[in-house]
Length: 322
Ligand code: PMP
Image 1 (spheres, rainbow, N blue to C red):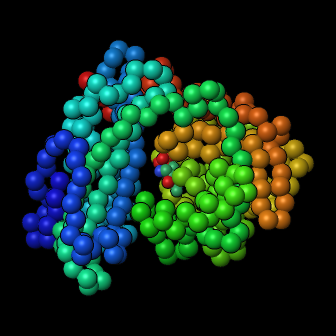
Image 2 (tube, rainbow, N blue to C red):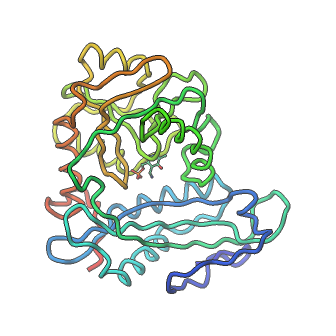
């Protein structure tokens, strides 16, 4: 779907997957006006297909667009585009359990010019790719590296938007995490370098027995749809759940004195990943015995059961496509 200043949204097309050719002076290549989303379509027990919370992605896409001075795609159009692609690719939606068809809606500037200003033309595209179960051999805890040198986002920046530039800026810290033997980086706040914000592509949850805390939306972390869904599911299951601030020192102390029983990360790709160990320049620590915890696994199952249709969709999150 294209957008042109003065004309609005036009020319929706469903076309075979193919390269997009760009002018060397395409504004996106220089000034990075590019935003995206990620969501999944799951096969349901009766063979039909449904996407998980596409209107939540559509809403976040609009807020990312506003932050990047891009036009807002109406939510109905966003969802209709995803629906059209899933219907076309229905045979590609896997039928086994946790596997899904991953959808990647994105939008970028298409105007040609070297002046720094919002583009007058944009292209919105959705592509799809089958995604296997994230943990085919069973859920494995991840170890994480706390980045003290780099920050992902600062107050007033683009951290709450799903903008390409945020990911470009995170790659060097992600590489440092890997150098320290950790597959994932954990980000701290930009001002005090003390408050835990989120993980590479996932939000974090801290479990203290029956009490669960996730970092509050500070304005510089991504408001994850999995995060929001788990706030509801955890409350449904009777946990005491809150949004709050967790400092990196508190994280270490609570892990060491045993009051912190589990930590997990959540996002569309992995749904829920247990965090087993933490490394930073100052200290290394483990969470409990480093194995996937009971609350983590219970919440993971509860959310996946809704997504795969194994349990009733009490919150109206599934969007059926027939
Ligand atoms: N934080 C970041 C930086 C992410 O890229 C993602 C993935 N979209 C998340 C959190 C989790 O968000 P969601 O649950 O909507 O996938």
